[in-house]
Image (tube, rainbow, N blue to C red; front, side, top):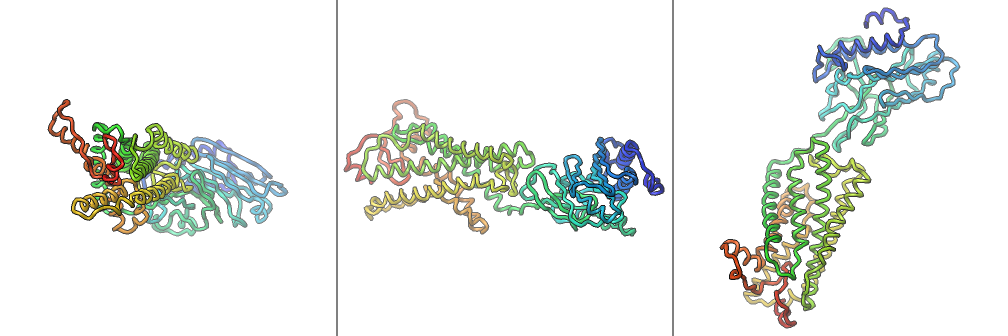
Length: 544
């Protein structure tokens, strides 16, 4: 077929013949949709692809009659999608002509070409189905992982001898799928040195995708505009940078620490649910803080396994967004509860009920994250999915990650202020501590609980800003994975009522005879500090 077209350069072929010739060439090459006998290698077949491109050029040229003054033709089959426009002397077409094929468009100035070709010019914009398997993305030499991100399309200028462009040609190319965060869209053209120079050489060296003379004029998540200073066969190739390999030690340390933290989260949740608490104590914020943090840690532990599954990754990213924001909102509520409790105690007030009412806690604890996630999903639903870190979370495109980072920073800042206000309210108590052995022991316990609350309230997340340093990376893993551990120690192990409850469980004693007399416990900034009976002002001062 190629030889016959070369020997009959002046022949004009009907569209049906051109269509059949395209179908036959793609079927024989093994790249067409109906080809069965031949399979193209995963590395492609650039030599066959270049031959078909040469045939395509001659077939399209045979569709244009030299006597035609102005014509527009279109061809759409399962093999080829082609749009052709020709102008002749005296044509008054617009300066820029738009041609399209399979949703891709090209804007070209035919008038400028016609000026250098006796007043006539023609351009064809064509896509052959299956060409991407012949002209594989592996012909693009780069250290990055590559992927074909569009159809392979060809621009043909039939019967034009002077093809020099006076201005770049723009192509609007639709992406085949969503662009990953670590991806770089590259405009490329097919370069065949053997055909251009008539020289023989190795296929890998002579045939390749090249970026010379083509550049990205605009790109977003849906399409890219390429500008090229010459015409040929073009495509979009995605270069995907491999994420930096995480150190095996850090990955192992993070996994082990999270598992330990989840164990203590589970113990704390069971304790809050099953223990017989004093009626004045409100553990709502602590319970739901444990639930939200444990679920978010668990999902983060497994989210990397769903990166390749787009729908599952999107759903997981949305759940993580909700749970992480809910965790920080419950941290804020716990900080407020703690501040209100300490403030009342410092004023020697009898506590009728600890902190805020449950309905208000539920409304804020889950209502705020629901509103934030709902608005985020409405504004940019495509922002949920795989990230360059290899987990399912929020994309950095359009700064969408601030839908999580923003609320977290606000809560951390507020917690810092509430924490400092709590310490300020405790100032008189800490200043009046006596220096005997008993009080010295109490002081150490108070200091420990203050530091523990610092972790529980999420203030250590500020360390994440310095994770580029190995020391801070390890410290961040240790501190933030053990929020469940500190919650269990402070609110369960160091609570006398809970310890007595544990003893009852361990000795399997049941009934009324197992009732425990609640003794005074050591008060601190993080203890419930609720007494089973009302105390006098002097007794409250003695406790402080």
